[in-house]
Image 1 (cartoon, rainbow, N blue to C red):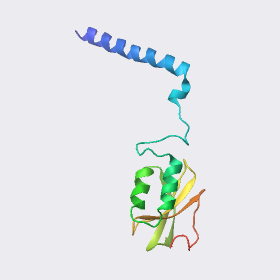
Image 2: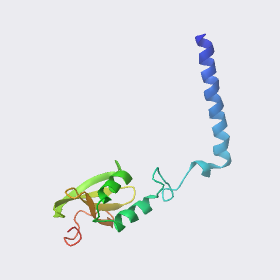
Image 3: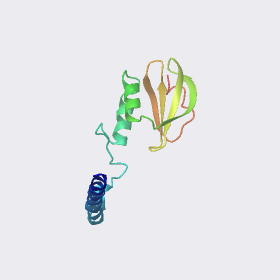
Image 4: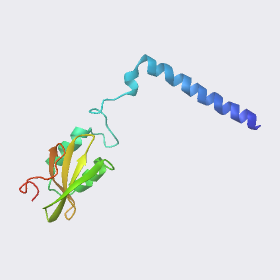
Length: 125
């Protein structure tokens, strides 16, 4: 009985592998998406997410959007005075953008392309 179950499992795995290979060979674009066009569960591209945060910086909810959009992708690179105390500069390597985040009010206060260690003081008020 165990031999039959094992053979059935191997046969099913083989069928799926054989089915998938010709599709990739015929049209590889079905299985590849450019990074700029890749959408996630939110239905937004990375550029659309950055534009949303830039448009809503300083507003309630922008901190939640930041965490939702870039969960696990942000690297803290600096802390500087601003906002209601201290602002954390978070760098997203995938999109080459730095986002200044004020944890006191849970808002995004500034966004710039590149790896920015320190924003101008008037940008992070």
